[in-house]
Amino acid sequence: MFLPASFSLFPLLLLLGGAPPSSLQSLGPSKLRLVGPGSRPEEGRLEVLHQGQWGTVCDDDFGLQEATVACRQLGFEGALTWAHSAKYGQGEGHIWLDNVRCAGTENSLDQCGSNGWGISDCSHSEDVGVVCQPQRQRGYLSERISNTLRPQGQRLEAVRLKPILASAKRQNPVIEGAVEVKYEGQWRQVCDQSWSRNNSRVVCGMLGFPSTGTVDGHYYRKVWNLKMKDPRSRLKSLTKKNSFWIHRVSCLGIEPHLASCQVQVAPARGKLRLACPGGMHAVVSCVPGSHFRPGKAKPGRKEPVAEQEMRVRLRSGPQVGEGRVEVLLNRQWGTVCDYGWNLASASVVCRQLGFGSAREALSGAQMGQGLGPIHLSEVRCRGYERTLGDCSALEGPQNGCQHDNDAAVRCNIPNMGFQDQVRLAGGRSPEEGLVEVQVEVNGIRRWGAVCSDHWGLTEAMVACRQLGLGFASHAIKDAWYWQGTPGAGEVVMSGVRCSGTELALQQCQRHGPVHCPHGTGRFSAGVSCTDSAPDLVMNAQLVQETAYLEDRPLSQLYCAHEENCLSQSADRMDWPYGHRRLLRFSSQIHNLGRADFRPKTGRHSWIWHQCHRRQ
View 1 (cartoon, rainbow, N blue to C red):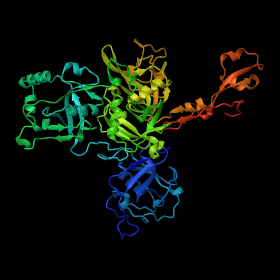
View 2 (view 1 turned 30 degrees about the horizontal axis):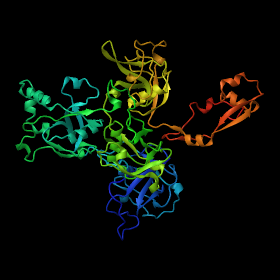
View 3 (view 1 turned 45 degrees about the vertical axis):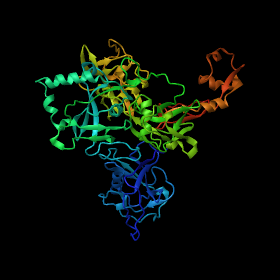
View 4 (view 1 turned 30 degrees about the vertical axis):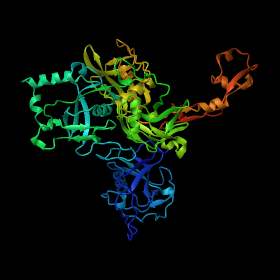
């Protein structure tokens, strides 16, 4: 499975006439990408786009300095290492660059010396790869993540709701309050003059909510006026400072980020004019999706869907609200091609599923390749559609799209505060350790361990998701070699049983009074998390097409009996006389995940099986 990562800031231009072969002169940096097996976007075979065709780079003379230039051009902070001899697979087509020589200070590979475009004596067995630092450069825009909005310069960086009413302060997540935006590192409130419902829709989408609610503006105005008259309140003096306000925001309602709306920070006349004369802070009320409604719907509960509505789901995502986009057509789930895939279309998917707007529109099967048909391609949404089925699109097979072009999304989700209520301690890396949770004990919130009784992979999955670390690779019940946090060794949660759809361990079923027969210490629960995992899916259509009944004599079924492939009634038969009627079929198992599937136990634990004459 190949996960290409393509990046660019400027279009590739042809070499200027008369340039010496060793100088790659152009009016803008060339376009680079990383290609090859694996799930991490920061590593892969280095490829460059020239004359409209992708080609590779030879590993001759290539070193850390050259890798650093390439990684910086790709939007990463730097390089960790490079790989020679086609470690990430052999490329195809041209070998565009050979004997690349950089000083390390260049902004792109174009500025480094080389033999010239297409001049090489290498074969594809010498294709070079790079491993970049995973951290992105501040303010970098990636073309691989379609039109992702990032905080840049003096643009609006973030948004939050400051609850005003006592009832709003008790809600989790906060769904109603005054709008505050972060501008140049400082939080400001937004003037309500000319504030529109379209603005509210964008704010709610950024905060992880699919739609807006109604606000009692008259009541909030009364509260505002009372605060302005209160001599003990600093609000009156603060509102006279333009640095307290964002003067005006105007959105269409389809923007995935407030930074892409029309924003006027201060009045046209600058400091000589108040930013919000006679106004107050804008107040927004959001409606949470079914996953995040406290006391109304359990996590993972499905809401009724109209028959005519195109059903959508996300698969293989390590976190809630992200994954490969799949749609149900003609009673069969299929994927969406990434041709033309952008934030507007991704946001429609996210809102349809009960999340906010899209943070990222991912291409190139970055959430794994799907199985079955590719239903849609070149999806074109304007941003206000209620479902993906309301958008224009082509049928998938019309343009030859393959599953390595499956589209995926990362949606904005509400901040529930769950990630602050769990932590790992004692592990060798940040992705493993003893699970410590924060719960309320006798009215006081305290940290403690989780009893390992009934602790399994389902519970570990919930813990890793709550930690923001993706999937669980191991659920550990005997963690004597890990030391917990001092003062947090007491078991505060036991009998944990999760269904797997919960957002936090605190939402799982558990004992009322803590009961852990083994006590604390080595029998506390632990986990090992990973950002990618296998996802095994059986080809149901093949089973249906190949199934048949066969009568077989018992003399040929000793191995099947030993492996419990026969029903219990076979135990009472007079072996080897008689026969059994078997349902036979071919099976085909696909791994749709982003990691290899490996047996639970290592090879040292495998045993010889005489029936099959192999381990």
